[in-house]
Length: 421
Image (cartoon, rainbow, N blue to C red):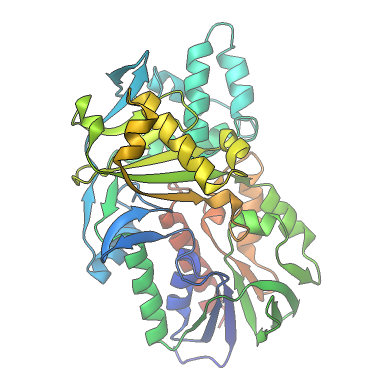
């Protein structure tokens, strides 16, 4: 296919924007405008002396996902399967837990029968009344909030059923970190003369069929024939970009999709003090302000990651990083039967990722509501062959909320544009 004279602007240099650019930059003149000073979006690997120390954003490859693993192979990036066991702290005792939720199969069977417009809250009220099932409800709610970042009063039962039944037991980590993958994509884009401009926040878009004018916070202006918007759903919901003519139906559709909040903390210690309890720990769960922790197993590094997601995290997103570090250490001390003072003495370094406090993201990742299917269909259709949208929130497959989801939508929107050349 010959190179077109058309120009395309992509807002956002995350996974969706980068792979869309790679797919299109050999055929069109592509410019990516990125608000932050680096590419990758919600992918952000921290390196110490050139070695991966922490993933403050996306961390796991959730299963044998074809696009992600294909890219890793293409880039020559190695990955390894996560190993170890999950433990829950009950009355200061560590107890091995083999299922996130007791009676898992029975729960899924009930969920499969539920109508498409039912929320998880309505499902629990109907099938597991609080008076008879207080502990089960607490476990389900904790899992929905922690894993899916979802509000049980908003999330769709069918969405959860689809995700949970397709969840692969295998999870992987990338040896050099996810940023190595997005750096590879950015490099491939540049090889095809794609122009990636960072530190450039888009504030306004004026458009008509076949013509787009983009304004930035710094006063710069860019024009093109088409525009692909890949900013996170939370930013789209908050109208961080004004469109003229306005696109109210599309902004409403964005707000019909669930958007979860997340705080992630990574603590590097001198010694693996948690191994006093077991050397097999991969995940640790408990009832503390930051309730979920994991190791870097099978890698033998003295790093623990804390995870606080969903509605419970909202109360903490206004805290400073120093306050969140205190919260992390106190939570971990409780779970590991250690003193706060001991853990502070053990601490080598820390990284706090309060994604919900960052205006460019305003949260972590999306989840499905009963209205999401219709909303996604509208956004994925684009507007007058001129405005297009991509990003993990618009993915309708079996691996939602993942880098794979973002990559999939970026490829899909590129295919749509190529098909109309």
